[in-house]
Amino acid sequence: MAEFKYEITEHIGTLSTNSRGWSREVNMVSWNDREPKLDIRDWAPDNEKMGKGISLSREEVKALKELIKQLDD
Image (cartoon, rainbow, N blue to C red; front, top):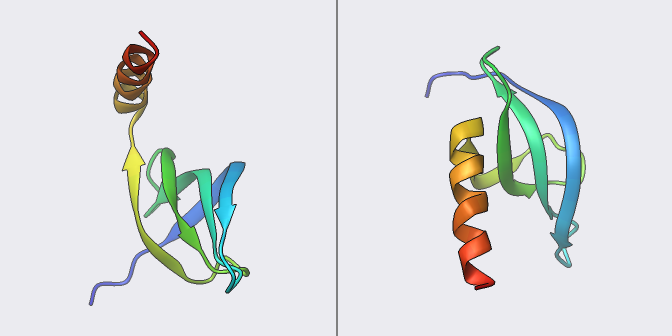
């Protein structure tokens, strides 16, 4: 499997934490030295392991924000 690099450039918040200590976090993450993206995924307590998640560009975040606004209507 190809090696990849990541750096959490900003921790925005924690959505939840399970009984094993893993937390679902919202962070800005740079993958392979690229521009940071908004990232939502589960992280081990030491942030050395991660679960599957989703990374969104600025444009995707804006689109998601508009879709969430429609839920309130």
